[in-house]
Image (cartoon, rainbow, N blue to C red):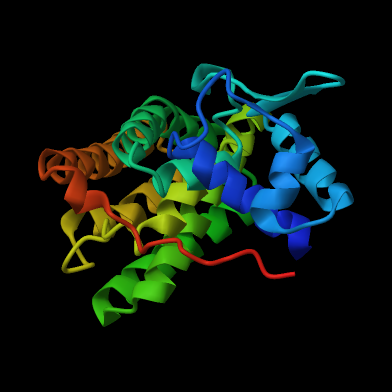
Length: 248
């Protein structure tokens, strides 16, 4: 969920600067630097730094200042960190990591869901798959993104594995960012998209192997689309420019 208010704007701008490499590992900032850069009070600057600390992007120590941590120390499962990385020149690395994570987790989650899911999750999964295929056939891009995110969220929750379920926020960042990143399939109603209903029906019927295979084909197709975009070069992944100023 996006942070609200002035300190949320400062957090967002700093996070994007960090993800873009404009603020480098080991670089030290003072609260006064943040205040001056964004024209905000010390209280707002301090709150923004606390949020970035909670995401492990920076450390803050008295008489030292705010030190940028190396990227491998960041909480890469934080949805906002993912969003910042997707908006950065390193978007390709983030996309590749997400595709690999999905390929490792989602087929296993589908097999578990077929064995463990309750009736409500089974119904929700089929409903989300139907909404997705309906939106795809209608060319409803907004409805498509919403239904796709709902499908994968329910799938991970239905696995009965709480750690898988918490990955929903991670994959959802990619699924909901695809419009800006030009990652939606064209046309929407591809074979991989339509396989969501096959996967949902297999889960609902308790067919674990079939569910896993269907999801594996879905995430494999998504990974291939990512690879094709990455091979198109950096310009293929340029989201809308972020040039808003912090507004008191």
